[in-house]
Image (cartoon, rainbow, N blue to C red; front, side):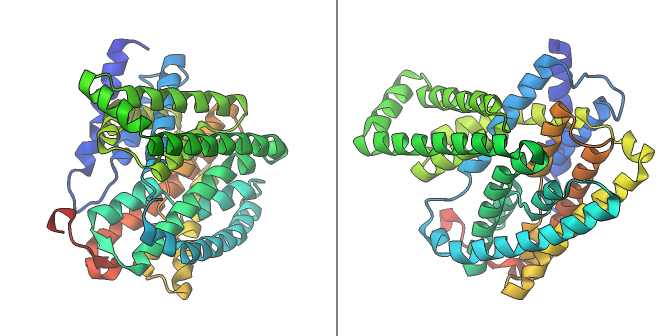
Length: 384
């Protein structure tokens, strides 16, 4: 991968912010980046080689960072959120039960033995998509808190279950890898909380800020990449390494300055590279060669929306139910894993992304409803 190709990738990555600029559209930035990847990859003009080792490495670094940032966005320290955990967990379990039924029907209908994978995809929610929408819309209230808990639980559970579901014959090995990563994340939480309580973390932060060393950023990247290496060695996805470490950091608390630094390197460079790499890896022309895969993608998207919408019976307002169906990280992770291991059928990876895009489109339509339908708008922080 040359600097010329990298410059092209970053330039096309601007299509994401450009497409997301009109607020009335409510289109996530990553959609434009995926479309740009499709344009220059296997689907489009094949300008870049998604199999290039440098491109793949940069993409995987972006993947780890995106999942890490997503984990830090889960408000584990919010005491009000804790009170809504029981209701959110109950709704997440209800969605999961419906998802299994839908997944079995879809797998049998298409004669594809991937029901466990489909169940995980249908049940998943994207904290990286839903939580920013809640924050930007300034929504509050008991139902919004329950939705936040539900999405966080569903996202975490799907990330853990994906390595087990995507390749059932190796589920035992994958489960062991999941336990190893989870144990390391728990140990990191204990260590970080200890350094926070002892004041060591504050002293390091003050020294780093005074000397302009960015020590906290360096240390977190070292830990993140070490966990990613361990995940690959344990034969599980690096998404689990990033997300679990992000949850540990969120539970301890992350300084705003460090959050801004991570946001800059993730959203400014590695994140766009990852989504362009995924887009370049996809070959949507396979959908034309395999028309049933188009129907598969639509079926997965509709099943996800219906599964989340059905918990209206448990008291969740229907717009919030549709919002909770928005998914991106887990389908993209499934595609990333399958791209490297060849576990999916021709066109199936594109079908997973198609289903994901359908859920995002449904969630985007909610921007046209009054905020009172979604929940109670909360006061802006600067007004409090």
